Image 1: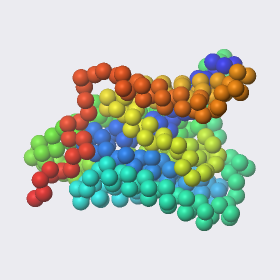
Image 2 (image 1 turned 45 degrees about the horizontal axis):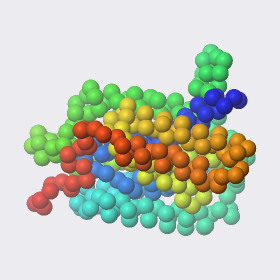
Image 3 (image 1 turned 90 degrees about the horizontal axis):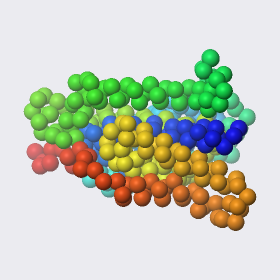
Image 4 (image 1 turned 90 degrees about the vertical axis):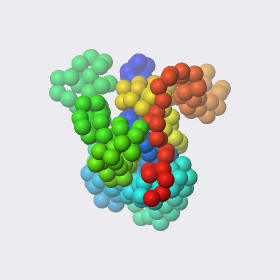
Length: 309
């Protein structure tokens, strides 16, 4: 595989979990809730997916377990922040710490009894007939896991729903004027809870992708800050799906480049950590330099109702 094909393929591979988790987080933030515990949700998805796969050998069960784990933790966040009106930033931080403890404990308890997933092949790359046989572009773009193709449908569906449906109008209005939504008969808490559960499912699926399709392994804290990167990419994209996609692909391209650079002879003189930090550094610089008058939802992070009844 030549350099351009390698970089393109690795760009998509790196972007998939970011887009999965980012799509859910974008929907949740449009309703006015911000969950910085998404790092913990992804990590829990990694652990649940990998452990289930190693125990059962079933890819479907592994993905389902990861999604369920993400939904359960997101439900806990919704209970505390949406229904009990706790501070969202503090709760998200606590959720990350909880997830780190839970996953590390579960891994220590079961790792000696698990079969390695290296010998398992529950997921196969789906080659789209005709397109996958095209020179260069076929193997790069049309030979991926089914979850990657489902992500494309998810992105299209969320974009259409947010832009052209009544439900999308409600989701967008919840982040700017929840009082007006309540006056119109919208159950604000229920809608925000639903958005958070959706975000949890997406984050869990992203974790499953990392552990069972990308690395075929699990280690404590294996997400390595990708959940926080998802939050940055949602801001980078100015709370729009096209912006999120552009940001995730940019980061994926930078990640692919750093992998390619590590294989060059000159790179042996440079610590590999310098290459690994490159995508994160560029993302932070882009956030700092990005100038736009468009901000996020007006009530992002604000409990509702703002005054206790």
